[in-house]
Image (cartoon, rainbow, N blue to C red):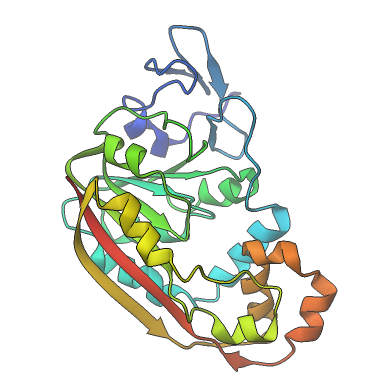
Length: 279
């Protein structure tokens, strides 16, 4: 017996577009089809593969996705998720989460917005297996954030971008009039203790804020900017998972990481969150 498509996908069907020809799509059992006969089968894990052409290199392999899921389950980033819930504007019904990973932040928003529906997007099929079951109202799909989004103009109310790549032109296009973009990025002192202990970790671009405003200001008006800073105590396992879930995992092997991180220690979590309204 064929399993039905996830119910979380249904509110997005009228907005989805074929990534090859931009035509509307229809769902037949577990397959999306457009008038040009392009088709996309729902993955067994429940996410919708909408990558067109050559698949981009994923930021999360299987080990990274599992490390992310394990670390976020500790609650060490719960204050970040709570801050996102507080900053997100009222009245949002459709939330697009870019680079959603395991769907942790999107699920937090949906838990507090009972009339909202979410769509988490990532290029990592490993992470999307988690995202597809993160929340009953969260759908999941794979597509390339640097390509045109397979979504209709004005089809979402909030674009959420947490530690993820950005495509400001597409963000603005898919946002409804008056829609918002919420961007979360690391501050210069984010995870400074881990960066000292693990020299191979990727650093924070000192010009990150300047570059962000250069690309966003022509399309968005900044509504608010909020700094979130606290220092949770992480045991060695959680600290290793935190490093292993980031691109830094590509620069340090597991054995070396176990040798460097052996004790419980406080780690500074320091991020900047900004809310922007589409011009």
